[in-house]
Length: 310
Image 1 (tube, rainbow, N blue to C red):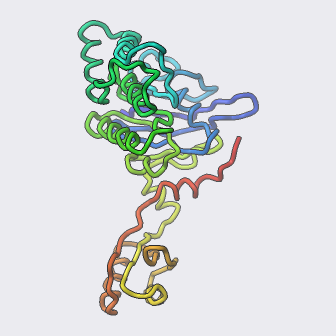
Image 2 (cartoon, rainbow, N blue to C red):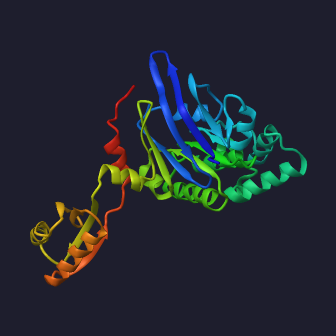
């Protein structure tokens, strides 16, 4: 059973259709990057998935339960982390976690164990006595993730969790999310503008613009649809014009162009690429590097979106 299924979701605000017949799903153990320009409908979609807003039409199912007919069951199954976590003033982190655990209905030994587990997982132990308002942005995000995990949800919905974090904090957050998905089997829907980081952890993506899904699925599959020919990079101990002339003469090679680190070109498949490499060796070209140019999330995003604002 899919962890999250969004079916034909529509939400309007006055004359603006913020979410326009959105469809995609996230499987258990999968990290789905939800990307799009500002105002594309990401947060509205996530709020509906988290039972914080109602759609005009369509439905969202979390673990098979509808957000419309079984919102309480849905809330037990998911953890929502907004883009900004409100901190309680004059409250130590330990009290804050205790308060949030009780708000989730946890009591006695179950509450104690839940708090202990999330503190250990997120590394909050040294901060338990600190006031929540004194925490750095990265530590506040860790505390927010701990709260999100208290009731052991099967689905995590994270709205821009890396916004404003320093490089180390972003790496640590990325590692935590990978552990949650790969080791604990949790499904994660995450929105972010930091596409290079999403590409490192996401199994699938859903690209949205003006409320509509432009594409969804694995980055490699989307990239293959946008650019059906395989792209490779050749770097050798030779002048660029020599390499470009050699590649242009090879059968099946197209789109030859120079890049900073070598010469890029496209072929139909891996067999054609291997023939190019063999021909280079026969010609006495001293090949230093020959590699496939992997799918790039930024390239996919720029190819699918226009930056239009509703």
